[in-house]
Image 1: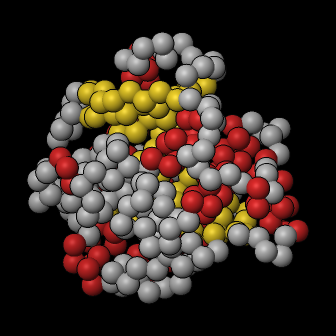
Image 2: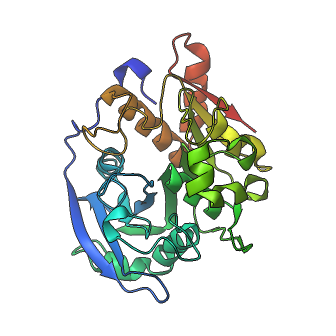
Length: 317
């Protein structure tokens, strides 16, 4: 892990990447065909895979395969194949939000990741020259905001919807799971907007999580539409009963310096350095999760402990 003051700004990498989209996949029972974007380095073999799950918000295009560009560009330049679906809640799809899933489509979101894992061969074969360059045994998932809850469901979190169905969709094929800015537990959900528009969030149960997960929380990530509880978004770490890690990023708000896209108006704490720091930290976790002999995550924690000006803190259990 680099010294925190030496982390480069994302977007200055000299490693060329390719991006291929849209890949359109029909999915039985899904309210719309799945649209995917795949990004990868132009060279290299045995490439691990990262699936990115976008958030939900007012933006038409950021909450789709077009979002999370800083994460996409970083991981593809670091030797990963990055797969991004557009989930059914994406505003640009204009799907009916009055159905049994409501506007968040939580069940469909988690099923999207299952579908991608089930169909990796078909997806990669659609990208010229990529099919035989992937290491399909090394797949990780990263999600931001509602995408983080999606990843949490893959880690075993259960959600009881407004019709009383308990959704349980854990996924053991994933080597690493990363939740960035997830909604916290229902105990701290006290914002009128969320309770009115997204009542399904009252049904989250993180105590059912069964897979190790990295939970990332910005210590300034407070949205009164959802909760006024300090560090509410760290709940998945504290409520999960399994071995997990918590990365608390000091000074970070919900967009963590700008991870949802380049120069977007929704970023309230714009900082290219913070984006780079977050990406490097996630990379350290994923490397260690994929390879137990890799010490990147342990070394990063040691760096934080020895630096009085550390940008973050790591807790493990």
